[in-house]
Structures are given as structure tokens and as C-alpha cells.
Length: 564
Image (cartoon, rainbow, N blue to C red; front, side, top):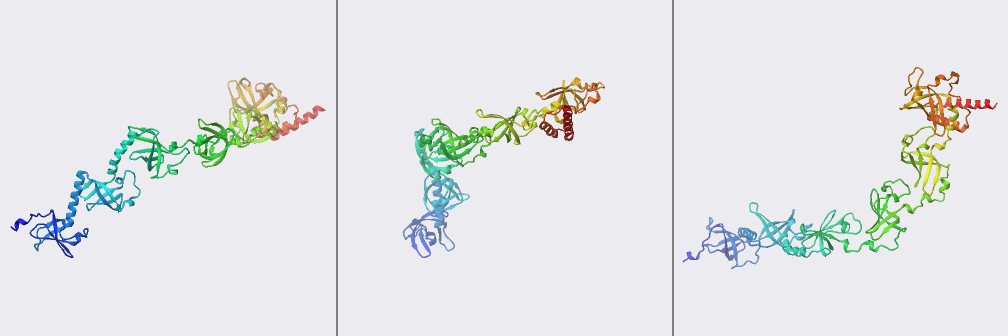
């Protein structure tokens, strides 16, 4: 009869027991076995209100120890029961009420059924969480997503619960989504090109160009994370589920409220927001910009880099040149704030014909060069007006860009903004003197510098050039003179207007020796002209200043004898 009152008990299993006694150090439990079991009172600290008659679960470690006592453990029973509950929750997809104990690297540690589980930061919410500490000490519903018995590791998720709740809401939003619809959202992420906004389970992109009518460098200039705001749907791709949002479209365009006082010719002030190769953009008010083309930055006709005039964020004034409110376009100019140098009242006096000036060479062309005398005032020096004596094929043989050159005004046409300049006119025409030096029949030592098919180019005294036909290069021995040879040549023609001297060597042999003179010219016409020749002689390789001076004295002496 006694044995029938006993329950079969197996070791290593969890059973239920009834508290039959409580001491300061132990709790006595009846599990229906032939003897009662004893459990340390430390294992019941989580049950401060434990009393006789309460039922608890314990783990049977040993039916009988060396003293014949039944050995029980509530702690092990709790662990085994907890793992059974965890596995059951995982199998049946049950929601568990967890307590967040502390923060750890990459997430949170939560307590489920007395077992510590890991809640990754990415599984806390559908939106990125930047501060995990706010969850510590709070309760949170989770689901078991992974169990690793080898490492006694459990991974749970709270995000999966939110996603299920949002799925129906997301589908409803997508079904009712239309272009132009205004929705409320929260900024969940921010990038250089825009922000991603949570619309209640569905994300949309608010591009940086759709944040404000004005220019901004980064979305953070106007927006912040977790900020709530209303946005309008600009576009929607049903297949890719991409939503394009706009914020500035909820406000009227700044061009629509542009003051009526702003008209062509009016002065405006603003901030430079962009500088390009072709010009700069001036922001008059957020969303209203005008282009200042580089050609409108200076009266100078030579385009330069806009950065030489202004930089981003500079506050400047400008004049409205064109205005189209419908197209929302405006062109501006800053050179108009100063007087056009071509309309100055003193222009005709300052640049009167014959006046001398110094300028900077800005451009070279095949036909001449352009000199900037002052900002906005340019003049052309024709290639033929560079030198009296040298035949210059291209201006680059005479001068380089950015060189300073002295010139004299030859012609002024203020109405057409044209200024003809000359450099050789700074000196008198030496050809007036050359006419008496290189008279027809006179003989001069010359050097052949080039030969063509029909003509050769000769280097004459004083740095000027002459020409001779190939047949007139014949020497006494029947051969023809070659490049580099210096021989006596007779002047056949002197063409002053064309600045051309035609010579021959073959006829020199028929000229008496006493007539073969390089200094048999007529009297010089003017002393200044002789001085001009002297200056040209300084530039010539073959010119000799002392010889030219002696020749000048001889010319003057001959003139005196003629008068007598």
C-alpha cells in the first residue's frame, strides 16, 4: 500500500514538486518519491514570496546520494525548461516578451525565459538605430530567429515583428500611391545626393535638387535625421518600387514672386553660387539666379578666366541685361557698372592721330597683332606697320604675346570701336634716305641669304633686303653665286613705294672700278632720316654705325660742293 503512493522518478529529468518545508538554508520538496528532496534556498531568490504548498519545477540530479538523500536542482530545471520554451517558440513562431538587460557591441542583450539572447542592432527596427542605450531596461517583443546549441547562443529580432505589421500598410500605400500626392515621412538616412524618407514602411528618395529652389551643398544644410516633413510624390516605378519625392514643389517658385521693379537695366545684388569656365551664376534670392557671362565681366575684348574676377560666395552687384520671366532666365553684367571706355568724352583727344602710347600685346594673327592700351581699348598693328626695313612674315617674328610695345595712333573710329596703330611710324621713313644711298647704278657689297626658283634674296647694308634674279647671279667664271656669298651688286631698280631694291651681280664687271662705290648717293634729304638709318643700322648684322656716320659726312660735303 505504501509503494502505491510513490511516483516513479527518473534521474536527469524535470519534475514538479511541492514545498513541504522551508528553513533558513534549505527548501524541502515533495516530488512523490519515497524521500523528500532538499534544494538550497539560494536557488529561490527570484521567488521571495515562496511558501509551503507552492508548486515548483526541479531537476532530478540523483535519486540517492551517499547519505541516501534525493538530490534536486531548481537552477538546472529553469535552464532546461527555458531552452525547451525557446525551441518551442522558434518552432511555432511565437512572440516572446523579453527584457533588455544591457548594451553590447553591435546590439543588445535581452533575457528570454531566463536565458540571455542577442538582439543585433540591425534587427531592432526597420530604420537605422544610432543610440542603443535608450532601450536598456525596457521590455520588447521579439521572435527567435536562430538557435546555436553548441555555443548556447540565441539570436532574436524585433524588426521582423515591425515588418509584418508594416507589410499591410506598405501594400496599402503602394496601391493608393499617385503622382502629386502629399505624404508625411521621416528622414531615415542622408547621403550627398539626397535623403531617404520612410513613408510608413515604404522608402522614397528626396534628391538634393528637389529639396530647395536655391542651391545647397549638402542635404544637412536644411534637413536633419529623424526629422518629420511633408513631401510630394514626383514619380513612381511600380516594378522597381522606386518613389521620387520633392520638397520644394510644395512651395511656390521664387520666380513667381520676383519683384516687378527688377527689369532690364536695373541694378541687383546677390551672392555668387557657382563659377564656370564660361561665366558665373549670381543668386539674387534663393531659386532666382542670373548668368554673368565672362564677356560681360570686363570691357576688355580678351576673354579671361571668370575666377580672376570673382569667387563663390562673393557678394557683388550687377546690371540686368536680359530678363525672361516665363522661361525663368536672366543674364547679368558687371562691366556695365563702369563707363564704356569707347564712350568717354576724352577718347578722341586721348587717342588722337599721331599720339604715342604703350600697350600690352594680347593676340597675334597672320595679318598683325592686337594691343590693349587700357581695359576695353584695343588697337590693331598691321604686320606691314611693324618695321620700315624688315619684311616680317608673321608678327611672332617681331614680338610675343604679353610683351609691351610702343605705338602711334594712325586712325581712330570711335563709332565702330576701331583703332589703327603703327610701330614703325615712331621713326621717320628711312627709305627717303635710302633713295639717295641706293640710287640706280650704285654698287654695294651684299650677301645672298636665300635662293628660290627665279629670285634670290640679298642682305644689303643697314639691314635692308634686296632681290636679284637667278640669271643676275652669274659670276665672271660662269658659275652662279650661292647662299652665303658676299659679292658686289649693282642697283637696277629702286622702288620706294614698294620698298623694293632690284640688283644684279653680272653687270658689275662692266662698271669701271672708280665707279664701284658704295657711297655715291645724292645728298640726304634730311638729317632725321639719316638718324633713322643709323637706328636701323644698329639692328642690322651688316650695319656699321661708324661707316654710316662717315657716309653721312661725305653726303653733306658733296652737297656743299654742289651748291658752290
